[in-house]
Length: 371
Image (cartoon, rainbow, N blue to C red; front, side, top):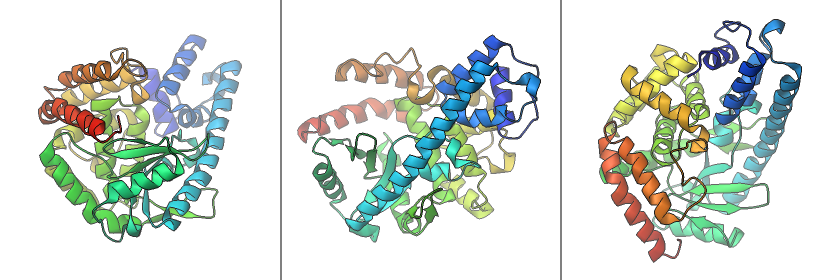
């Protein structure tokens, strides 16, 4: 990672007052490009406002960066309102709804309006979530298809549009593993914690309503697993690590909750990845050592950081992922397979299970008419 970019992150987080030197116009242009690649431009603009005048970008770039930051603020205002509206409609239709990532995670930022928003991700459970009954998959997909006949269905979630501006990703489960044993343990853990999530309500900024969001203890496990899934599937951006930094820094996360989450990570086989993420957090975001999910591992962490800087957010900038938006299913399958082979030495169980899982998932979608 470029030293100047890391220093700018530290300034934005309030960990230092200025940069090591005043960047040139070309260096500022490179910093802006990287900030956009990592979907952290608005967060880093807050750092620019703290810099001494002689270290700030040229006026033209400064205005461009400011305009992007203001668009991000406006998008967050709209997404907060839309999230409250969508969750309210699903709850009135009889579902329990827990907002995953997105605006719920943004609420943990010092300035929630600076986090780059995406779509609305929610764990949706029939019968108000009072228990986790059989048939949740059909209940959620059926409701989604009534709202949007073009709703797509995956094993984990269904995607549907409520308007040209609002896309909803309704999860049947929060996340998944390729490994059957880990998947079984994850589902048991998540199901047991569902009642506490439905009781944990958060008021989103600028709205008069609140939504159910994960507890900090739940997010300590879930967000790490989400990052892990992106490593195997699409690619990781630094914004996802910044989300995790603020989750771990939450005053809601007690020492007991932190230790319980660490035990869960070990049980789910995520200890090695947690050590790699801890290295990135400690190096890039200067996360306090006592809040890290595991002791940092420099070797694994450097590998992970290289992957992050090569791929960018959602892997959109990874030249190794030629499938990203084009090509057919076979092309995408082979590209994912090559990517998973790269991870074999680091995370062998998931890498070995991945081809079997992907093959089964493809056949399951074809059999059920979802492909």
